[in-house]
Length: 276
Image 1 (cartoon, rainbow, N blue to C red):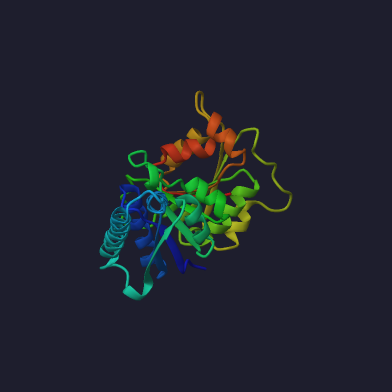
Image 2 (cartoon, one colour; image 1 turned 135 degrees about the vertical axis):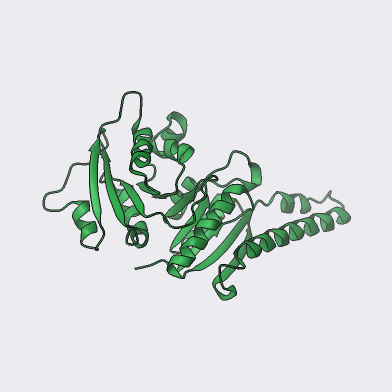
């Protein structure tokens, strides 16, 4: 079991550069194809289509868009030149709303790697990996801008609550988990923690795949919510990857009131593989 077809969202921001570094490490581990994708806003195209815009301005807009796309492609290819063979490196550039467009493409790939939403960049460059996971129905590996690891992390944590989203994330993560020295199943006591099943546990299921597993169950410390406790436990364990489900509550509730998904994506210092 391995990844063979990886998509990485690349827009030349620091976050997307971290995502690309992670995708290159995955290529080195599994020999997978890596496709860079850039989905760009159609604001300039809308302007160019206005009747009042002079023809000279339309030509200028078209040239600027083409030149910008060319520079982005060149930057992507230069970054992977010494690490991925040309026949295994691909590029897609498509006009459209970035989150929706990348979600459409994500359905064609084993896994999509996206830099964490970077508040240093907004507007048409902004990507929201949680929304991409939500729209695509596929796993998304979210990489923080500050992530500088030189190898695939050897210890992963699964934030297990027994619900549908984390089950989907676990399935998407299996090739990566199979390569780990250790996987910790973490349960945080809260109202949403599912009841155990009779006769089998997730630890048993993972062990049957030859994965080394341990587990811990904790109660959030005073003043910490579930997301903060998960991150604290990952830090104590020295984990380099977190696998979790996204948005078991409604997206509106998470964005308005906050929630586990938002807490973790805002504060994580390690990659997070999430699915909805």
